[in-house]
Image (cartoon, rainbow, N blue to C red; front, side, top):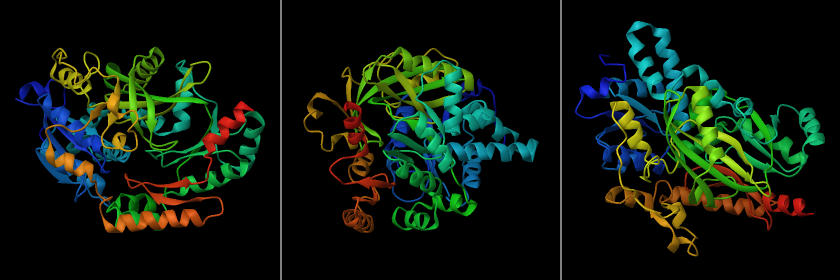
Length: 454
């Protein structure tokens, strides 16, 4: 492949070429494509076949098929066809695939060196990926950088959990590596629930779940980790009583270029994605973003999740996503226009000063924030994809929610949930995730808060 691999390469073209990769049907990938298109980029995408937000937006010039069974070949073919200046993975699986492709390209020698250099240019220092992908190792590193974190440990045996109970009071938060969107997170309020989670969370890539995902969601990406027999390590954290917050950042070779900090006003369940947020300034979140970007020598987008502790207002880092996170695509003024800052850096130009899309501090993400939030919605900026009718239609009635098969599986899961003695069961939400759901009167979080008050 004939391409320039230095940062001055974009200057030789009329437009910067960006290749977005996405294995999920998330709206974020399409919204980022629109923002990159607005700042003058030629946007290409490699994504699954069939309906999705990334397949519907008019901002993408050309699309390539992302195969769930042969993901690395899909990525390499798209890179060779597009010859991009930058590759941006928009999901966690895409980050893993690019790092796998990097190692494969390095092992093949000079003929694939350009692909390895492109991935390193786009994501930053590849050797640090193992730290980012491990929730335990990330928190160890954060502590070394002076960033506050909850108490945490590895969950590897019943004996270890018993020792943990002697030091850290319940409830706890159990998290599996390599999961996202809250699907690999459980809040447990008993030792028995913790032991069950320790056993179940590493086995999310089971055969029946992979088949269900392939048939109902048309998502074949779960078959590969099942075939490889992947078991994800589990981390246990102390439960922080407080309110969730997060920041989304863009950086270049360890230098922070832009940052948006938010506090979560409403979310999709106790561990799910935010639906309404408030834009804030927060020194602790900025410090964490600057230190991690520098320590890991990152390039591109990343996001950090925090809890703001009740009473002390201490900001504690709980996890990191090495990919774009909401609201990275929004134009929110100087220092908060992340796509423009990245493209300007890549082109060797000053970041443009563009008017903010809104001065409102409350943002309702579309479409999740528009559901069941009628009390607060009139005071929010409603973050809909203006000017892209096809994308708006897709997000308003997304796949697979609109299919009869998905609706039947969802209905069956809720019936099963109601039949369980403890009210728990398996269901599929609008992102196609499967999660343990508790339909009893009190959730583990509510019980934890009551226990803390007592």
